[in-house]
Length: 87
Image 1 (cartoon, rainbow, N blue to C red):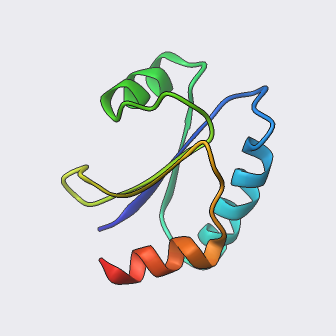
Image 2: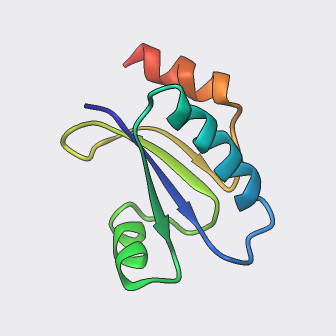
């Protein structure tokens, strides 16, 4: 199963846009997990994936291997859907 991991921070200027995109994807049936980089759990997951900036979106497989990434940018829902369909 593919999962879109969304890493965010409270004062990130692009994170609200990222949340809008990911909520649209969730409504379309895609699996999205959110990680707040200001929490211990979010920071640990971010460190595991070498997340250095917010927002970061990672498309991962069932083994938690990264298949696509968007670091510091917000993709369109269609861009994420295209990547998802190629997997």
